[in-house]
Length: 476
Image (cartoon, rainbow, N blue to C red):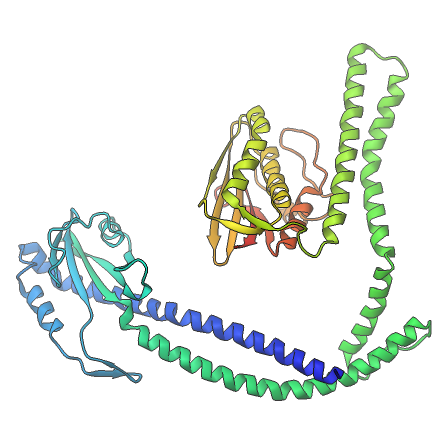
């Protein structure tokens, strides 16, 4: 297949997928947007009606007074309104009033009088002086049976709370407007694709010409020729030619090997110097107490060297993987509990408590060993930087299409200067208890594991003190 055709098809595919993605998001946002608009209107309506219901509520005639009469008359009205091509033929509001104990004393539909609504979110929050609203389905399996409820406090002339008035409206009453908006979005999307195809054709011809020149330049480099980088196609083409040279060097492995050799050599100097010094002191036959201390130091530094080498090898392996070697469904709550069990000894030694919360159904697709390793590193960090007797918490919660594994400690937090460097190789902070620094590779491993699972890792200071590490992974 000709390169021009391939480029055109590739471009059109990219634009088509992007357009579909954007249109799909727009379509999905239409209904929530309409609902938000409906909720805003219900807030105004509830507060207005609460003022009108105040006198009857104060006199004890809310069920048969002027307010109830007016609501009943309004329910019989026929609006005969045409809104954006949708006919509205009835008043779709339901109104009920509860006293200060949450007992319904008036219902425009007459089906909840005497019922205890004190635990319903709209009534309970409004009685506490907060914004009260809820959305409830009559049929839990059918989204179209959902209704929105917005409450407002009913007060007397002296400002005393008399009860709560709730206005309800079925979501199905605004569904036609959302559907009409979705149809218009789809029609606009079709026009967008047609225009994109024309633009793509011109772009493809121009790019084919530029790539041909770049191909000739690449052949020249491969043959050892000294050629000027092509610049007549613009700055981008010149930068691409320069990037081609850089890519060639990196493919040779020179820069990659040099970087790791330098960092590993740097990290090995300190432990090796400590081991050499302790060994030289041991040759002088020191007292038994000093001898034990020097031997412990040698063991400690050799273990540190082993840890650095093992983690560096694991990091190199992860950087060359395109996807996890073993993928299966992993329950995050169980994973967190396993990590908590593994760290039980260290937690007990420091007098720390670790709590795990989150739904048992939370699942992601990935390598359980790598995910356990990533979460374990975050928990180990939290243990290192927690004060003795403190608390650590692992939360599993969903945000959009992601499951978030967050580890919260109540330590001193992360210094501002360190926040941008937390994921640098071999960067580590001193432990609050004066213990030995970490290898500076733990968080780098966590980031690589997250990236391998199409996720991300973020570390920040919690607003109430301590540090918060969040590992985000796509939901299974």
